[in-house]
Image (tube, rainbow, N blue to C red; front, top):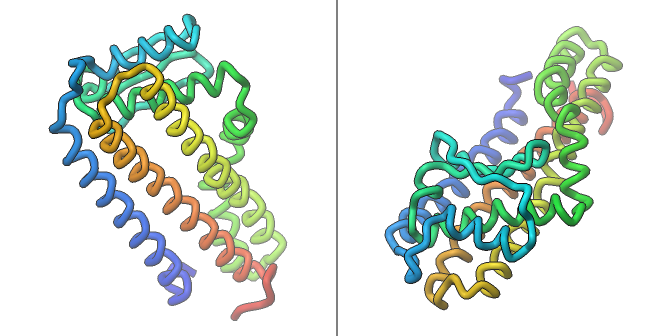
Length: 229
């Protein structure tokens, strides 16, 4: 199956989308990480200030190793920032820190898509491993029932990627609003935040499109869209 020209075409499209989005993001970060905030705040300072304004006192901010490893952990109420964004005083650090606070605000307000995403994490993990394995085995031995089960499991992963889109876009929207209301940015700095968060959103779009294309291919091979020999 993995040598099927159609599958190679599907994955080729996904790869091009992913590489394009990653290149866009790297370009945006490379441009704006060199621009310091006029107020001289670090990413941690920005995150804490927004949390204070929103009245979110239970969330801790911690540094985490890695590059672009920033994330919010709703189960532990911890906002983790990579070293460059925890200590950094750039437009990029402010934008990414504010974006992660956007997730904390979603958590506080019970934002439904975020709740759904958290609920389907186990299903998504199964879908990316067991689901693909069942499709592969089912197609190889012509056990289409097994392949269809694999497709359904993989569909959980696809659902996760689709739900992730509104969660990430909304977090970026909240970040922009918080930064604007807090007076953290000049107009030029705001342009930089928009550029970085927009490029980051493109990576999630690329992932979702790739996942959907894979799902459609697996459905085809499992006989769910008509038999394909």
